[in-house]
Length: 355
View 1 (tube, rainbow, N blue to C red):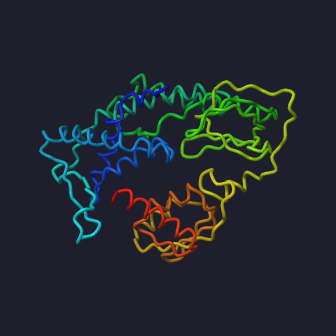
View 2 (spheres, one colour):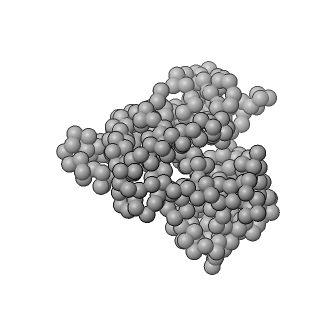
View 3 (tube, rainbow, N blue to C red):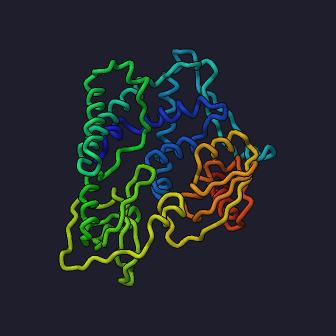
């Protein structure tokens, strides 16, 4: 079922992203916008690829709608072609940005307001659904504030100035969190229907161990049988679990031998149970990028010496993806395996756009 914010439509959400990106000096390509949209929706890699052509058309539609909104103000959306090779005019990217006439004009103020009001409503519902998981005093106090906003106790013009929400979709299946917490505490073996993105749904029996949130998505970690029937640590995204969870009274609970505190301290995110641990060295000569990473560390092991950044971390998908955010601003010094990984992903992107 779609959330209220989803029902506002992809073009509206794209326009909000465009307005942010078109104000930068660099501007943004269609791919930049699609990537930002998918990140905010927590789309997995396969889903991004599957929806790429559709989202590209949505970006085009949203750009036209945005252009109409700023036309009466005397502004426009500019496009600049940047060639991959100055001597080869066949391959290029078009970067879009606002003309200087845009100034402080907000062409999508009405959309921002709608999304904020919707998010307030969804947050209020989420707090009710989460009752029993968070401290009661926190729930009561915070929900009271949310309700006051919804009832316009504080003037509407003040809401838009003091309260901002990201466009991540609501946490799905949040209402089963308290149930899972109780089952873990009582050491109950459970069974549910699970539907991976790229596979058919199946039923699985799990010895639940812990719950972990990452990037506004919850994951259940537990012992479950692999293809050979051997119990091993596995993770299950809550938004892919059927809400009907049953207990297996006749199966003795088995506790995992994994130190999950150590498991999560070694990595960014949750993936990569069998990946290597790397001592990573990165060179950053761009001062702004270095300061950004200093204030928002990618991993807790981060150490900065001069213009070099060091990590002791697992080489999992989330870590490499975070590095890719700064791909044109950083140089991987070591290890070679990580450097080759980045190069291969960059080549895949180039080949895709040359095809």
